[in-house]
Image (cartoon, rainbow, N blue to C red):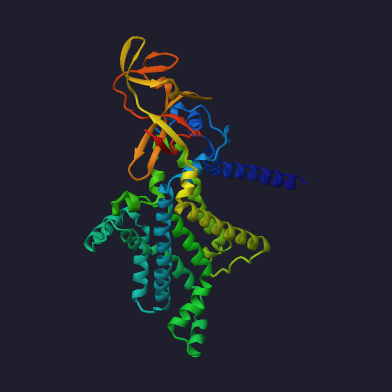
Length: 421
């Protein structure tokens, strides 16, 4: 009896410990999702700015003023983020398919080859697999430069297709296939192509799914390759944007990070029943249950609907205009206030107020992306004189255009349409 109670207590303690570890692992993801629905000023209030985390007040598990403006900015107001999202797909999908094709053929060659050089070639693959990618990045750069591909998308794709890790896993799995099956197929007149496509590949399906998920996750998050092999920032993937977060883009970055997690989760949802079996020795895939079929169907429908909506919004200029706030702007000008001449004077309407205090909305025009607004705290503005109608500013300010009025309050870092300047 005592032994049974001790075993029960041990299981409870282990369950509690594993639950706490699971919560700790999922907490960053939870905070990312909740912060994606927070306004920019609330994010800075809770977490501080990107370059000064000491300003943080406390962590927040839920938004106090929930808003979807971050998603509206990233999906509807500008194609800038969607272009980088599709850039990530453009790189990751060909690399994943290319690696699976080359690695499966190389693994089949190692499986069918029965001479003394096979062990040496396999050991070479293992040695290359142990080398970090940063070691081989310089040879990739030199080869791309020699072939004239440096700066093009193909420099990233072709350098990522060859993977010793995929060959290692697939050849390890193919060695578990009995030679009797191959010999029986040869007696029936099957050639090497039929043996490869009809016998080996179907039995390697779990490993192919596992390898594809690992490859997709690795190159979906790549940073070094685009920075070294690409020159045009417009061809960068979305992972580059997430690695270069500016303090004024924190809110949008959280929303984009949530969208960035969707494709790997969809891929794992389709192949989760193969993932564990893919690392076993000649293991069969986990049987498909009704719940897994329902989940796969829901994922497929959701992915198709999401891509359709993104494509419509991406190419529809009318929708961009509909979801973009219309603003009227003004610039500081010279004026006489209370018999004193000031060189930088703004009307009182240019000062806006919310629950976090007073602020000025600075307007910034980007050549390719459009016009955005950034909040500047009123306390950070040097005011020389203030009346009920005018505000005189000190000389030397680094912003020249501010929002005077708007038809809908633009969140910080959101894109706007200027009606007149």
